Image 1: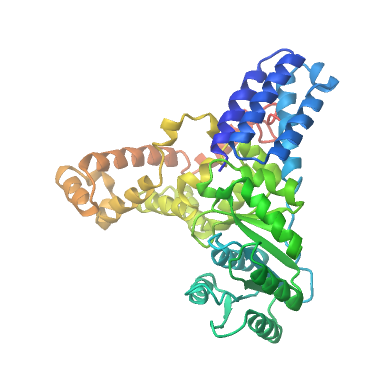
Image 2: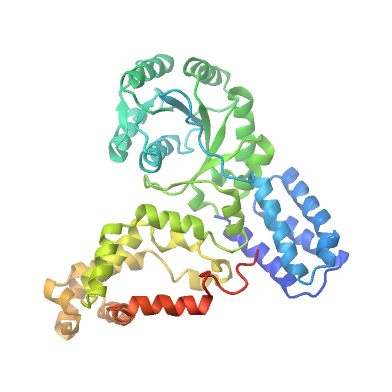
Length: 458
């Protein structure tokens, strides 16, 4: 997400970094380029106009003109304005109502509502420790109820049964009564996709809303529709009084116009971002972190949270103890590292969270793909237990057998063994007291604060 905008803004702002002073003329020229970058990202025109005007007014102020590093101050102004446009801070779900707190999901057909219901149920269970029940009121789409039942089982949420012969109002009423009896913390209600111009369908969801009185009414919208997402959300908000937006399919959107337009046009916050089909591919929306990603500075906080949530800490601790005891790092351990990476969504999902990724050329990014992880795992799976423990015995005939078993070439076996040797060399430094020495070395390099001298750009 935001790849195109990051590239364009990065080029514009980098030209300002080294300048000793800024003039009114080059500020105006910079803002013309920023305006074009935002329009190409499909940001709504009123948002673009306000954004560029606000940045221009602040940039022409004395703070920038008299600054010793005007380029850096200008970047900070753009960063702050991006945060303001997207909502200043993360807005959490309001679950303080008497249980069960009802969450109503609305949106257009094909926007990813049902998948988002399951993702949200999993997020509530795993991060908020809530007991969750889900119900489908979509009696129009074939197999919608079956889909939610299957997803509910996958994420560990209780499913309240319904069928296409029932009325949505009756389904929701029965589900709410059952959730109360079962002492559920949260009830998530999935609804049928509808257009805001369809009066009959909008009337139905208004009745549903009035009957179950949800504490959260979330509008689920496809980010790839760009600024149209904001326009549609505004129309729904006039009918339903939305409390927030779930932006889906962000992994397929290289522009980001929806994320930058929704708050300004609807007045409603984006509460979650969804990416991909996996049930754990949902993250709370943090405007300040998103601004950092847009400006190519990564999102280390989200990355740390993702690692904490998805990495198997028991296995990580076992590996640390093994290395400290002086035992060797073998291909079993190497495979475990690859599997942990795959569990986190692979390399591609981490790239936009790493600082400086916007400066890496496209042809280099293209060489980094998740297929390499799965290919590595397949190659190691084709080895015998002895070969995984003692990789040095893997010679000519063994390489050919492993390549045949994993559907790869001998050159790829050689490449993997070379990568493993480098990893093994690094791990040897951590054996015994090596890990403590490495930490002392880093502390000496970066100072007691653990950060590079001068800190981060802002």
